[in-house]
Length: 119
Image (cartoon, rainbow, N blue to C red; front, side):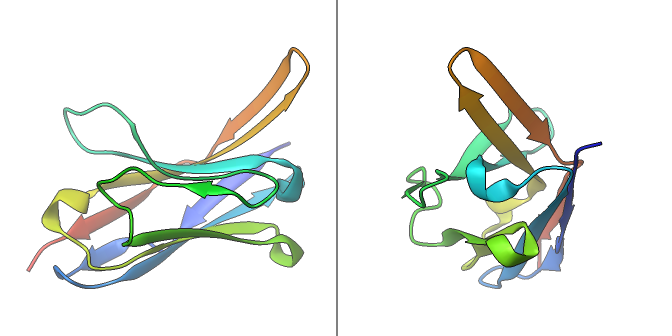
């Protein structure tokens, strides 16, 4: 059974930082492309960080320079360091693991972790 479990969310002040983690069981994350998404009430899910299995990364302009995605293959974990937090970063953050082999796609989601940015 595949599970992705996010942790590290919570309440932070504007300008603060959090480190979100996504730990997998049942799959080996190192072969997956990994993404972090977020969703706030009334809005669609938004991609905030992407890392290929080879280590290339991409971020939308809204978080570039503030968010950093990283892997720890030994721990089967992907993390998202979020710095210089803004109230608009408040959302539920989800990790996604995606593996494509020819026409076959395997995609898994975690349950999400809440990040609230407020003074």
